[in-house]
Image (cartoon, rainbow, N blue to C red; front, side):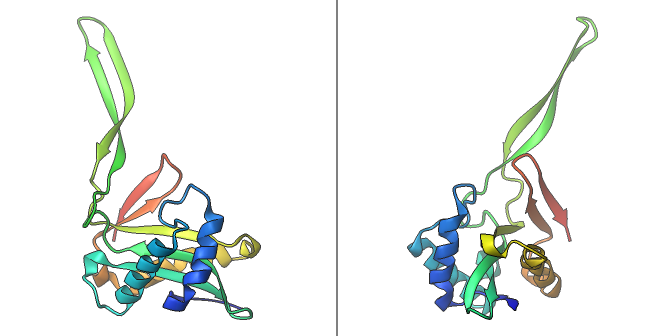
Length: 173
């Protein structure tokens, strides 16, 4: 049987093991014991309500109750960009037009932005390969939405959802 729960200090070794399986694509789950240890401390303080709302980072784990091992992780950062810059790109359209010269050029353009500062962010979703079946991944991912629905006062008005590199959405609550 599997259960989702808040991370605890004793989960650090299992979390490090998961982070070592992630690869280079996930920047929020680096295989660095010291950094993960700090993140676990922040998460425990976040769930206990011991730190400012804007600094909170809620880490959830999926535990295999038969083995006692943590086999998945997901997280919500309560507000990005509050203590370090959070840059993103925004896709815009640039148009050069002249009726006299009969010129019309339209280009999609990336603009550097920090429009998502103070938004909550879903991040750090990872499930051990042996558990990627059934509804395990959906459970681990959607538990974050249940937490946000239960505690809307802990989060800003917008939530950043990452897709692939070209698709990001900031949805309003």
